[in-house]
Length: 312
Image (tube, rainbow, N blue to C red; front, side, top):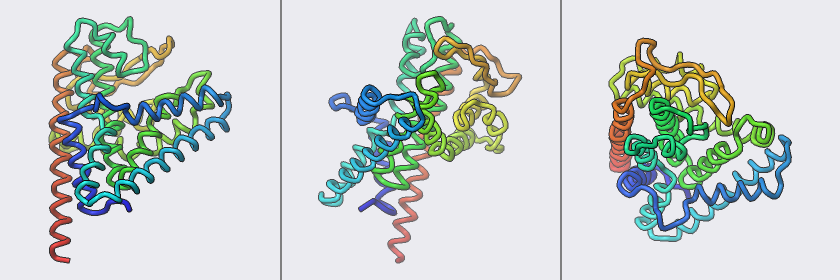
């Protein structure tokens, strides 16, 4: 069975808490790495520069992770209720990444070579970036991955249980590996990129709205006007929301795979384009703000479900 009602909210809350205090489980191979291995194996064996072969890749990975998710949930359902709930929460926590995201961005201001630390976060060229550019890229990555790594997987966990969060991470991993507009992946990764855009459409806007609300912005929709200028239909919204709340300008021309790509700026025109340590610290302050907001929302949902059961 899939969890419903109060149980799934408890699982989500426990998963967030485990991720916050435990982070990554270093002693096991991460599920996303296993998904990445499957994608790379398919690509190495079956790659063709065609949309059809990319469709086959996407169907294979999504179908495989759906099957595995359903099988794992079936096996967990054979366990006693409380044990099932706890183990499901532990597995789900491994598919959240707020602690890892926070710590990786924090490393940018803990090293004399932020260019090296930044390689863990972005696909763009980093070697010739100055300190301000590295900090800007780190903040953009934090805002974007706040959606991809926290809000979106949590959203699909609440909707579809463990299979839902696993399939979401498979789609997101497909996009991160083959969803590029390059000669090799323009056709092969097209469906993966489009599917990732689709599943992230609502979570990205929820993330941007949450960033605005935890900073007590009454006009919480203010991010939308600039956010839609981004090349991605989703990434610009949380990036703009972050820029507006830490008082800087993000975006601007960026080098990807040796090619300079023009990009819009995000944030108030009066805010500085030079990003410094204080901007990174303000960005990372959202770690506790966002988590506290999510804890509160989940606790309210648990309480309402409990009241509903009590009076049923």
